[in-house]
Image (cartoon, rainbow, N blue to C red):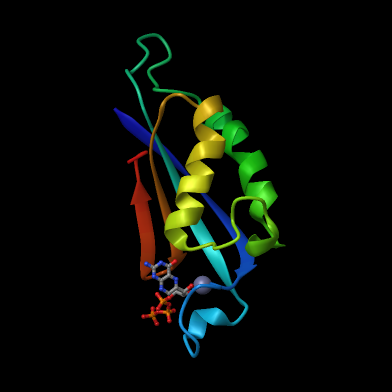
Length: 118
Ligand SMILES: Nc1nc2c(c(=O)[nH]1)N=C([C@H](O)[C@H](O)COP(=O)(O)OP(=O)(O)OP(=O)(O)O)CN2
Ligand SMILES: [Zn+2]
């Protein structure tokens, strides 16, 4: 069974490698929506996959590192596309949350990435 928890964070960024004149060459901001999905067996006595509180604890430090920051100034996020940010977030979360199955990252209400480690 899969369960999820959602997080939001506000960050500024620009995309340095897009062509001149592209709107994303300019610094701008997003309210990102991050959905973290974990997979596991339903534990019989608890009747849950994992405690949502533990899920939150594993993800909160990563969200805190991104919230109200300029993403380009963060190590590994010099070219912070939505795809690149999803991989970065995955690599930060996965070691502390082996049950992690998928992350969904919306940069805008209509644009986003789904990443499962490949
Ligand atoms: N594959 C990618 N394409 C684009 C990325 C990206 O990270 N990966 N990023 C951007 C911009 O950063 C932009 O913030 C998002 O672009 P867009 O979806 O066009 O945003 P809009 O709000 O203008 O889109 P609407 O169609 O008005 O919802 C661009 N491309
Ligand atoms: Zn953007």
